[in-house]
Image (cartoon, rainbow, N blue to C red):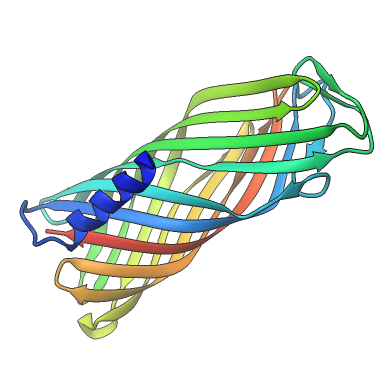
Length: 245
């Protein structure tokens, strides 16, 4: 109820008339589908389990909130809150060792994957004219992650850490018309792991300063080390509203 009230308040604010110059506000709602969600915890001694192949994972709702400030026309700083939780249920035909607990074959399991993301992004528009905005920059991401199994035993693994990412943003509205395309991405790969968050959407300028976006978001990544093996791939059907003023 609290999340629904927060989303409703943000949407009401987006539809209101502009008040503060230089501010961008965005709310996004989506349905998330999973094509990969594998875990082995600990990474050097647990049992690998797939939330997709070994258990049943249903589509999950998700939302995002973003607030930004543009200055000197070409500079933009944004803050993003992007929570995500996906649940899987079922039973396995083999014993599972997970974070010090043992789950016998055939026992019912509830698996919870939570990945909340907090990001601060700066980007600079190299091209910003004639309906085209091409920008790049950096994102500082804090991940608050949890993988849990509940059944004959209850065990969970949490991890909070910092992840640096590169940001790319391309928005195009041909001839400054009402309709266009948007590509927005945060991504980086390193020996310790990788992370990608990529949005491709069609856009509609409903009125000056108000844009509706409908598209597809892909989030993929993970890490493989002694402490944790975890890789996931999610697909979002996205509806997004942005107000700039």
